[in-house]
Length: 262
Length: 309
Image 1: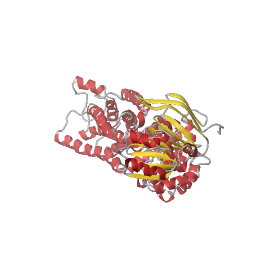
Image 2 (image 1 turned 120 degrees about the horizontal axis):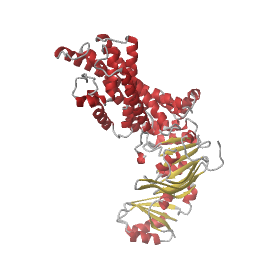
Image 3 (image 1 turned 120 degrees about the vertical axis):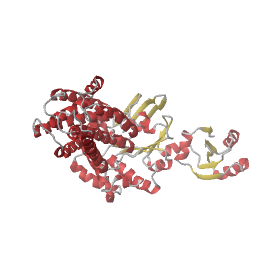
């Protein structure tokens, strides 16, 4: 009995269920795009930010919006943990001959795939309408952005899984995810550059793994040169390490049934 | 894979959840083939025992063997489980759900393509194969669950209160269909429906407070009961009055469950007039039947208030 077959089966089922939740699927992409259009154009026209390294604020905002899309996506995908627990499906999944981690791996890979796909839809949809520099070339720059998005979603999937395995209600889970991830989003360089911030805010930003995903995407698509940015080697070293560790933590947290304290 | 011993052997199983003791020296032997019923009130340990057989929980102490082996994830491939709560994914379609479950149990796609239509036909769900699970009635979902549990052709089928909330017609359909499996599969039924157990089970064990208090065939368990079972709605019955009834010749067990007093007797036609002489104004109703598994159950499981003579 192949674990690979079970992982594939789980991932297919998750993707099918997500694809059937069309309103959730569309809103996860449309909300960030609307945010980009209105906030980007509003700030560019109304405030005329002068401290940006290149381009206008809408172009600057794309990387942050992609990260925000991933945050939304990981939160929404994790709703399936609660649905499975409430519907009793989790009981079936935990009664199969497979280790629960095999089941979790299948579920999380589907969440990862959806998160990456939604983030890339936002990037691809925004790219023609903003002034991107693609300083390493379009194809290499796109590959860098995709790599950063994959690592980012790996980390977010791990975070969501770790929380979902221990929190009993979906409302509580959403609250905790928002509480944990939104402050990180603000101090990641997603909405404003971090190099001009006060020292204490910069320290917070450098301790924030989302910062390195934003930085890698900014360097890939938006930036001209590397001044004011962290740099790709550090970005991928930090993001890669944190993503692998957090994903492994998520996989180690086996969901609990509520029955009899099991 | 066939082993000569019993399908299930449990010896002195203990299991605690914090302060609460769920199993308290639970011992049971389930022979191969046929339907074995575990009967007991809610919270008596039936579901905990089922969870252990499905390797979803472990004994704190004691020895448990399923098909000659300690329960394990690998052994789940030889055991089918229908849980007390539904486990069917309402977002999936009926046949799709079976295919999903079958693949998780390692059944090849070609085999599933044969077994799924056959099981849907057998359980009267063939015309609902493409419908969402959420559109099925409660009874249909239970049938789907049993079909799912039989998909990998298990040697043991564990049914944890499979007909709870199911109407009598659906219940009959389910048992008629399950009857076809009883030869090749050992069915372990946990229930608190005594009539269902009396009709369906070849062997029965009564469970109370995490222990098996009696086990045998329904006929064996009914042995020693008087011929008639008298059920009296008698809210104000006192211990003294029940002691008087217990003293009458031909009276067997007297058991009380809230407002109901169960009495077994050699001859109900002699007992009932005397009851009305004793407490006619307090008795709200009387029904007389032949002694059943229910009477045997009350003899072993409920609190005894009088003895047989």
